[in-house]
Length: 243
Ligand SMILES: NC(=O)c1ccc[n+]([C@@H]2O[C@H](COP(=O)([O-])OP(=O)(O)OC[C@H]3O[C@@H](n4cnc5c(N)ncnc54)[C@H](O)[C@@H]3O)[C@@H](O)[C@H]2O)c1
Image (tube, rainbow, N blue to C red; front, side):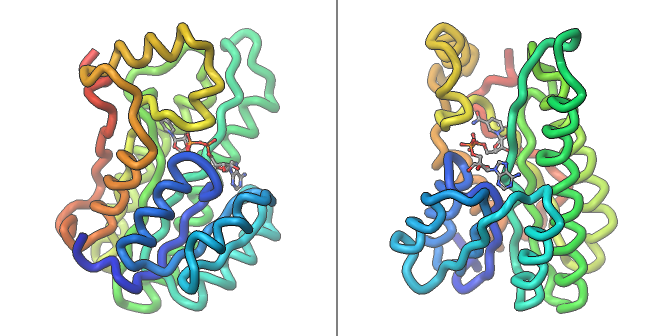
């Protein structure tokens, strides 16, 4: 894809699933990676996969100390941030605890706000523009049983993306979101077989998505091929949204 070579790309939640596939895709496109995830062995292991063009920060994106480490890296330069880290803490409304609500809001919404603000500040000061990409979900559009917290954050991400696009366009900063359908990652694979079969059936293409399907869409939106796309939420869902 056009214009990703040597771009400095930050990806949160990069140790697993969609984030990891996104790191692989951007690396293959010639980008320099800064990967962020919880303290896990996998992230260190990724150094071997991405020689010379990868550094990483181990930490929780909801914690101030992690955000200051990220800021120090952003200050060295940033072209793209993929705000991918996200969690689920499912329960039906009447059983959902305050902690389940608060923890999902903190990772899926507040961290994206803080990281985007940080990235946009540097992109604006550098005057070269930039790209902010945010992880939404198809459940933002139609809700999901047991996910009052999660679906609220994903709808919030879409609204936040549109607002940021309006505010940052004059500084050549594009902001877009992706709404994945059901993708075969650890987040989804822990669900019961019956539910997985239902998800496959719900997609017009009759399969779960692969992390690489989402990674390709992030790479496209970050590339110069998408130079006139901002404020959009791209559904990458095999037709799941069609019902
Ligand atoms: N898998 C799907 O079907 C699907 C569908 C729609 C949207 N999404 C969204 O895509 C994104 C990635 O999902 P996935 O399926 O690859 O999930 P995953 O659980 O496989 O990976 C998420 C990664 O984020 C990291 N992470 C979680 N909390 C963090 C924190 N506080 N600080 C730093 N890192 C943190 C985890 O350690 C993990 O490596 C999420 O935002 C998710 O909501 C996924």
